[in-house]
Length: 247
Length: 225
Ligand code: HEM
Ligand code: SF4
Ligand code: FES
Image (cartoon, rainbow over all chains, first blue to last red; front, top):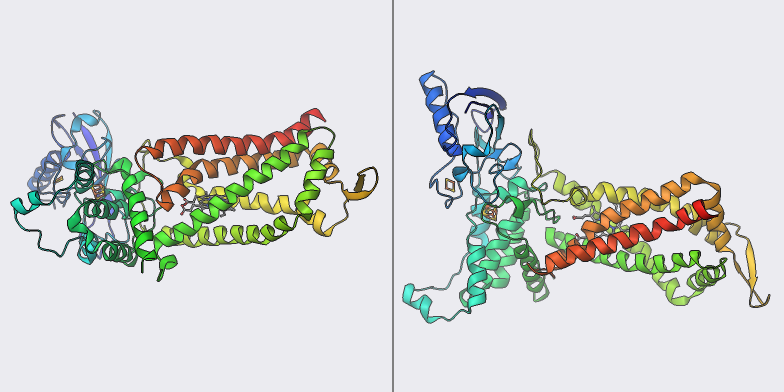
């Protein structure tokens, strides 16, 4: 298939970026979106031009580094799919595809399609951990967790920190990300020790770093490649109010 | 409780509680107003008189005003703060198939409701409190009460564009509540994967009751009187 790409190019964080248009012929519909970008970059390098910078690592939907805003959707048009797992068969021959970086004050562009997602790490550092010694595998087996909690925790723990929730939210809110971490840790005995501290610290950090608040538009859960539900946000809100009341 | 209301979630809690309070008020208000459709106005006049003179309602009135002010104030604070979070927007956006139009436009919808509210208050409340309203005798001539029915029916029968304003106002409010209703429960934390579907259905039912209920009153006077 032949496609046109309208890609955001920005040499560094300080410069003003702009869109460049590229035509690409003989794209296989079996290529992943990132393979298509590799193919484009090979062409650009051969022509002596600067390749398009984009972030990627696992290319199997587990590391969360590949987020790109494609045709007006975070991670592109396919539901519950990361950019690296998106296939070109989702597009039609002759399509023009608009490719932009995540847009949020909290996620400044570093280069082209790469943004600085370290604010999510800062939120994690503020409380997204347990301080007790969780031991080795056999210790985990000796602490009983009921099946319902284990399942819910597992769903929440599937968040890969890609930031699509922030990118898709009209308020650039990181609530779904935080909610998944809070819900995950709140299900386990190991997470109880600092549960109140954790939720207060993580929410305060989110507010401090320039993410917006939640207005329940559900854009986050619609675009989350892992299908994290906003029921996690309801749980986060409960945990937050309880923590504040117990102060 | 330290600093709860300066956090993003705490501010949203204020929106939610004030919104829930306003939604209860709307149900009471609609119930009284629907009495306009009963008989020749005696029932409504009596109900309006009861509402205007009852001490409990007198206490609730300023609370209601404060409820509105807080809701509008925090709506503005939250909306302004959230608008600052994306200095460079996307050049292309597409629907995700889930996000409702109302949820993205709550401030505009609320703003329209506010414009309507000002018109509505000058139409009736202001006149009843501070203006001249004809009175009518009830209890075999023993008591004189405001003829609120004539005030309302007069406006709706004489000016078709007021009927239009009231119907549009009711529909905008309906849209506001189609999102606001379930959103308020989500904000408080009373939601999960099962309840979200139920709350959405109840939200639509509530929104339709409010929009249709308040719309049929001006339409009744426009068409039937
Ligand atoms: C009778 C009138 C009104 C009722 C019953 C009402 C009810 C509600 C409810 C229940 C919510 C949901 C709260 C939540 O998501 O937690 C809400 C949200 C909202 N309301 Fe109202 N409202 C009314 C009037 C207004 C007015 C006059 C404005 C003026 C600007 C307004 C602006 C907003 C905004 C911007 C939101 C969204 C806030 C957010 O999601 O952050 N509302 N309203
Ligand atoms: S909640 Fe979903 S969209 Fe948000 S960071 Fe985690 S995986 Fe990505
Ligand atoms: S590259 Fe790891 S999730 Fe896409």
